[in-house]
Length: 402
Length: 69
Image (cartoon, each protein chain N blue to C red):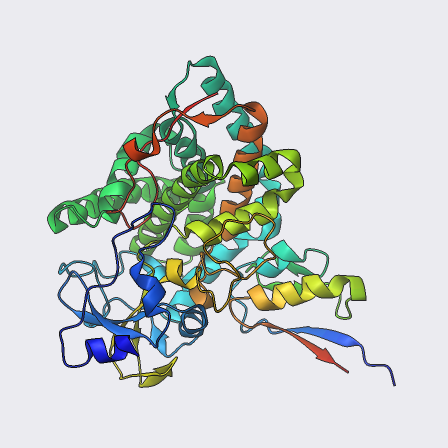
């Protein structure tokens, strides 16, 4: 009730962003989950609804009355900079456009296709661990393992040369940063587009057996897909494909190291890896600013009435810690029964690459723990820098020894 | 009359997220062209019911239903 009284007649507060503990979402969400969605003021100066509860988040994400089209003037943004329209491809479109583009990709990410990639992923993991073992600790696990693995995997899948990883990794980080100047982010966006445009043009001349080559041959050649559309898809997959998994992986290792009983249970019974990965996804919810929508028409959400054309921020990390849905939500429990977490979102836009992410996390964590039975953090927790200013949460560096 | 739980899938609602094929691979698959759901067994055994229910609960597009009939 306090919340309702507190916001009426005053300027909306900003959404909670300050974490008092790096392993938990900002504390302010606990109070917000007690009531209906509230109006918040975003860093851009625009107001939007903040949806914090699990049931409300799930309902919004499954409801086509909420649009993902960022060309709408009220679509929430972190900064005042205008969206690069079409820049994030089908992530920021509604059906039928979203469906048309996504359908061209779903066959590439089926459970069967990803399962067939397991041996290749295991080879990459084994190679990285071999190199790690030859070095002398302490080493930065982000730089040497968590980031190269998903980068190598997505490069191979798309057909992007891994030699260019320093270029696209730095541009991705800039694009996802909430603290760099808008011009720099826009420049990073354009540079990635120019790079991928050259790559796609080469595929059109000479199709190769990789995702970009197949899309060029199947859809660009027939006119069903434009070059610029394929470039935007490539950029989305390249960014989403390595940033999210890399940060989930490093943060998962750190989280397990900080929960020794859970780590011991996983080491004792490696078959717990699948529920452990689901629990880490729920617990960490690295898409820390949530997902954005704008209402197409008036709609009621969890006791609040939203008018047409209002922005909505769905706080995934908060929803995944809702005591109304999970027992002891702030406790990491790798044996927790599957609770249908929202770490990959929900509804028509739910993560296309989720099976690939799960498989990479499963294999990487299993092999890392098996290789280094005495793996430990090589710096005090207080010295670690967390990515509070990047759309995808994580740790900048993770010094470990074994 | 014995009531047997019966699975149904709606391929027009499916967007190929693949949760069903991941969590219940013996009940669901995805086609090669568009990655949309394929139902492998429409009458799950009692032992398969928990996996079927998990697939229903995790499906992001409510494309799977279980009915008694």
